[in-house]
Image 1 (cartoon, rainbow, N blue to C red):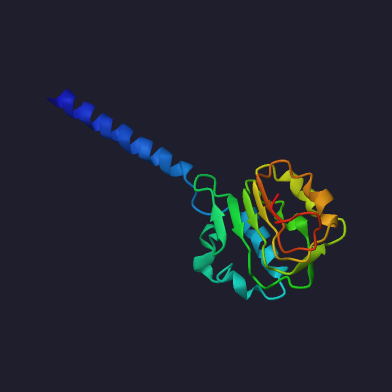
Image 2: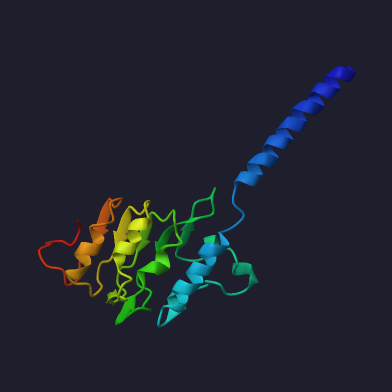
Length: 175
């Protein structure tokens, strides 16, 4: 009977140990470098009110819980940024290098922001380092044909939306 109790206790020990180890594999929040990058991105907006709770208050220190941000639940890395209709970049030039810290980024939505282009030497070719980027929505901005050369280097893209820009030779804007 005593050995049965030890066996039962050891089973529970392994169950508890396994749960403890699995708990350590799940992320407790976003990575600090990505949190800082999101705050830098926020400061690049003329009017960042469209970003809601980004970085406001102690309870909002986990950027994975911020509006418009989705993270990988195991790594805590940002995988999706929904920055459409933020109204913060109208008549502005975007610094594409602000997105480089998001190494697992799969989806980037920058639609309807009135972005004119990119800061010189900071164009979208820099985003070719984001090897997981599959979906890019740049619709309804003010890009022209100059963007096409930079975008050609984004080999991981599965979907690109350029509708509503000043790009010629594209009937519906989706490539």
